[in-house]
Image (cartoon, rainbow, N blue to C red; front, side):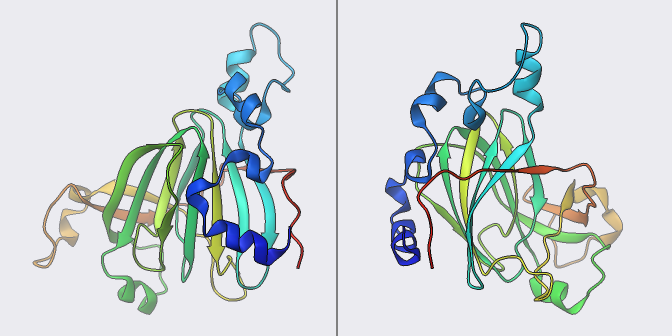
Length: 227
């Protein structure tokens, strides 16, 4: 598939299906618990449930250039992609199959975040999304400072999400992926000001090293992307 053709197809994500990116819908229906991995897991009668809950998140890389990157995250049941940001990026996401819980925040003062490079400090964020989504559904989009730029995914069932990031992460360009941990608004009473109103829709976010978070690479078997 030519790059232009794939990009055109991405504009029609409402009709995008798993089979369009090489994911076998019949196999997924046979065993939603294993999702992308199907039954190809070595196990005995005691290990089936353990395998279902212990498989890491798998990333299928589709394409990358200076302007954007395309890939698929496959999450087995209960897997989590922690809160992370997308600095200066637009992200288009499409849930291909299954159900996942999405939690997303925007910074209350993104300008202050740009002025202050000390990311170790807790910062105030506004909750934008906190819900379970189920395929089939339309795509979602977030922007550099709005739409839930900091989000996390938790697999309610085995699921997969297609992500288009524009531009892609780049350490040299200063677009680092930073992970966060959220705390209830009331956890830091000393930081409350006249300009903030105590509400369940606010939280404090602190940088989390996420040393134990692991994503493994998988083989993409869908249409070939060519430049």
